[in-house]
Length: 363
Image (tube, rainbow, N blue to C red; front, top):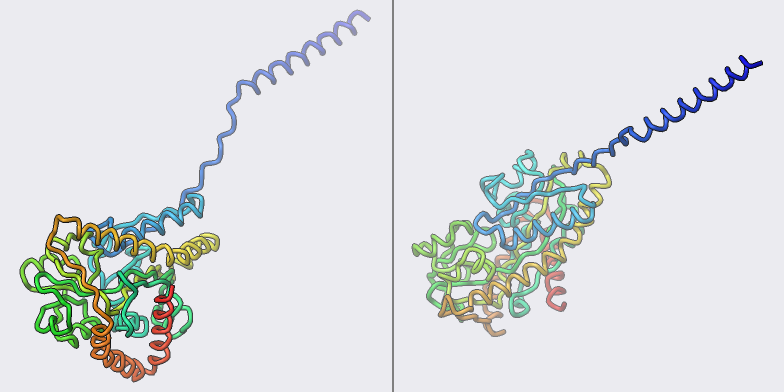
């Protein structure tokens, strides 16, 4: 009997010791490591201007990157680069994006007039002038892209995320103020080419080509005596040091930016990531309109700060705007004829473009 009680006692003591040791081991054991955070999807974004990363192109790119990061909760990280870092020249941006040198790129469509003639309806002069003081762009180009499949067909192998607005080109000169069309006669005016170059020529000036990066030197050396730009360039690349007369009023063209990604890159992304990129790109149109309007006023204030005097802002009267409009009308007629000769709906696209622009003037 005594042996049985002793055996029972030993078993109980053994169980107690086992439980105690188990508890002690559990208390000393390290907690299981937390799962590592998922690595963000990283995208590169090349925008246009090398000389001024803080200019409107850079602000638009940075705004989109921030919107996407916040909307995705940090899952998508976009790194922006000023012009020339990932892709050397602006006319190479589209092919470089398709080829994978960058994931996203932004530049003005005027550099691709031959490649996408319908999209470049935005570069044509529109009669009726602009809304003072600078004009307004809005979402006209984005609406046009959505409406016409023929325009969308001009962007093969690409996902067009957005066509945000930038600005309307006006005439800025070094020495001679332009108050009448006759004041342009014989002046060498920098224009990127295409319809804008044709407009400068029709008005009596001599169009000279050159990039924004080259423009300061062109003006300094007298290669150009003026340019078709906006106040943005007067600040971002300090053209206010050389340009002293700023003539507004005529709708010479409508700068439009593209924000694109290669279709292959787009297809490789998860559906929820695509959704974020699309949503933010849609909102970028309105954001970009505000960015450039705010920056344009800021750049005008910079130009007229007193540091670069004398400066003059000239807004043409209605009768003078009408004279310029009459001279510029044949440019639109020729564009329609050239585009329709290629079997494209030039007249329909132009009519809709002018309707959209005139709607913007009412807002």
